[in-house]
Image 1 (cartoon, rainbow, N blue to C red):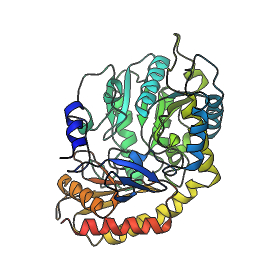
Image 2 (tube, helix red, strand yellow):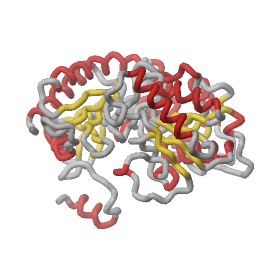
Image 3 (tube, rainbow, N blue to C red):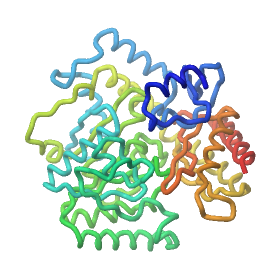
Image 4 (cartoon, helix red, strand yellow):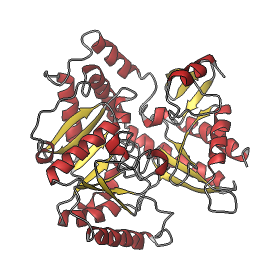
Length: 427
């Protein structure tokens, strides 16, 4: 055990998870690569849980942060803040929500907390619809709407949560249906559920479930849900903490795959926009955002140094068409993964879109999750110089692949080759 690991265990909670049998200390990064304390270099296909969206040590971001830190780092939302207003203007314009207002937080968890506060206040209801296999953060209220047992440490909650079918296409009671029938069955289930409860405040859903193993419904499911919700005045909250900013390649926001019935009422975001700095936030129609009748501020949400990081990062993303790169390179990568996965026993599915890809593992010859092998593949990939993540619903057996959106074709091929070797070497 390393000295740092021993010190970590001495002061950190037992439930604070670490990857790898010999935990990794990352000391620096550049582009799509990071280095550990022993000088080993890794191709990073997880980006600090999808936070390093453009690149490690992106010069445009580090320059903006350094210059801002030399002026002032923080003043709170009690004062006018030019970088915060400028970033809010950009995000409101990109959101697709009419007359949008933006409130900044420090994390996706806090963003979802804020969205729940807004929705329950606006609708005068503490009932919330959420998706099975979902994850929305680690706070008390966010845990209360998380449909994933592995990330739900308590059943206590300030909310009454009802879980809806549809977030996982290939498991559950409707898995054998074709896409149209799957959507119809999920909509029927939603209508039936609403007939047995008091009017909910909102449905919150990730367009692609992140911690759940990068699972998703057929395109259009949430548009069909929205028609049902609108009949009853129920709000739609799109949790874009992992799917936003072009990561899915085909769309700038994940909800746009379900946009036939209009944009969400509320969008939450975080992770990639800060490229590693702590930015989260909520976008909502003005009448929803302005429904609170008490004072509120954010001490650290919208602090100047994170706002300039977000502005520089977003500008780089748009100017270099990283959404298009995610579509092109992600398309090549998923085909490469599917090609060799078809020859490897125990790979149940390769799924996802853009640079948000999942590889689900099962015990060969069965449909039973195989978390032990997922952990072994993580170790083998690290030995080969590749960092990936893992996740899943009933059990953690999906590999999560989400590199920075500036990934090159050569790096995609290199990472795929390492992952193939890791899968083949861990039967």
